Length: 243
Image (cartoon, rainbow, N blue to C red):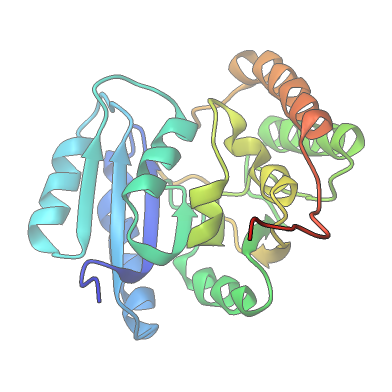
């Protein structure tokens, strides 16, 4: 038996969230302990320019379940998630934003759905973002549903739970974390959306705005549509091997 394997890995992509990290871990740990499973918490620092890295090292020094990874340069959320997924040793992987807008108490409910599904995706039914960001998200999700034919209502959710084989098989490219439910379905995995809590941002500022998101989103949308159309899909009905 591989003693390094865990039941659960929780991955946090982090960029300039120093003020949130201590409170985030203090909210998360009671939930994880209540699951009665082995676990690890992985913080991936996407080259923060505040004290995030120093705070992460302090949290690691005080808790043996915490692991930390640091990028040399800023590579984006998709890269941070990919690095965390590769480092994860859990049979189940939880991905969660580090901005305190999601509640760790929603994790057990999502985990329960993995009895029937491969991916349980959080659905922010009542978003607490500023109106422009909520409008951008609604427009992006609507456009993605129309073009992709995918019924995911909150593809950019900050909280999602996946079986290990999902993160091993689904390849992330820069910016494509916003299309993860679609990518999962393209690989044949079963995805369900479950309502989760959502809170206003307590510290710092959002990393996304209409200037840095709209054009990239449209390019990524067309890229994923191309991947969807070009995906190889076949089923072997019979194979005769050599005697």
